[in-house]
Amino acid sequence: MAIKIRKVESKKDLMIFIKLQWKFYENYPNWVPPLIMDRMKLLNRDKNPFYRHSEIEMFLAKKNGELVGRIAAIKNDIHNQVHNDKVGFFGFFEAIDDQEVADALFKTAGEWLKSKGLTEMRGPANPSSNDEYGLLIEGFNYPPVMLMTYNPEYYIKLCEGYGLKKAKDLFAYKLDYNKVSNINKIERVQEIAKKRYNLKISHLNMKNFDEELRKVKYVYNKAWALNWGFLPMTDPEIDAMAKDLKMLVVPELVLFGEINGQVVGFSLTMPDYNQIFKKMNGHLFPFGFIKLLTQRKKITLARVLTLGVIPEYQKRGLDAVFYYEIVHRAHKLGMDLGEAGWILEDNEMMNRGALMMEGELYKKYRLYEIPL
Image (cartoon, rainbow, N blue to C red; front, side, top):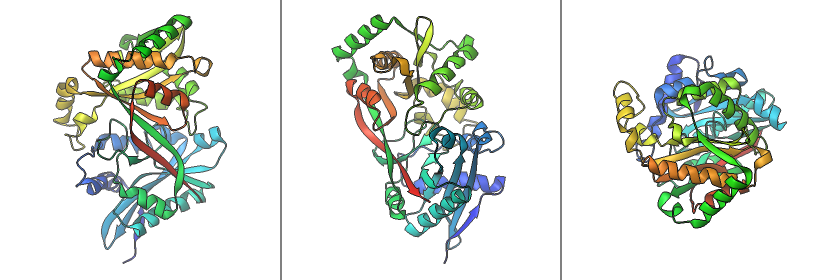
């Protein structure tokens, strides 16, 4: 029978779209189910501030009367303004191992993007580079850490079978305190950098949260401005993200670097809550919330979500200071393992920093693209 594609048009459809993901991971023990309430919030066109400047259309695929796949097409106006291009995105892609199904989904997303005047399709972006980004292409034997993607290996074949080509790879490094603590060079480099530039490191002050958030906004949209695919976040987007993470952050792992009273760098490191979320099967309430509160101190890994230095102070060794502080602070909190990622494959400074920490390149993700 022919493959039928239909739009997500109701709240019931949206819940089907979200819960359909479970179907594809029954035999993948490393997969971590997302929280359903978080997915509902992420895809809410009325409440998520991302959709004030972007559009999304979601589709479901049926074959022989059975749901067999899903995809979203995303038009991101800020991306196209910043990069002066006409790129549209696909995201939230899931499908059975059937090239015809995948082709129908990619074709549908591409046609919608083309109807909006866009000339290329790139992805996966769920729904942007500030969220879950990229298709896992190496490292399937490890579970994903917080806010990183995971997918069956055959998705590579489905993407490339449709004609999607590599746009950029993203790297993730595994860090180990026991290795880092034995590297004398790191301590010397970070100490020299701190003294040379009079760099002061402080951590998040929860009592002055709004002022601390102002510093985050300043560094975030400045430090990464020249990076490939970078998408600046609007103030409402950063405010919404901060609200979501406020209960989960560990203040000692949210660091600011200041020189002469001016903030020049910022890093956000989070415990890998996926170690807890994995047991919740998508449901925070009623018992998942209790697990979150009682088991967070048992988390053994931390993810460096973001680490950036403003352009005027890049390539001066300040990133080494942040890495050193993160690893040692996480160790004091019982997290001896870490993940630094994702990092653009050609981001020389950040890759060099991770390698200096004897980080192991253990996962790779890929952004694909195709002309429309």
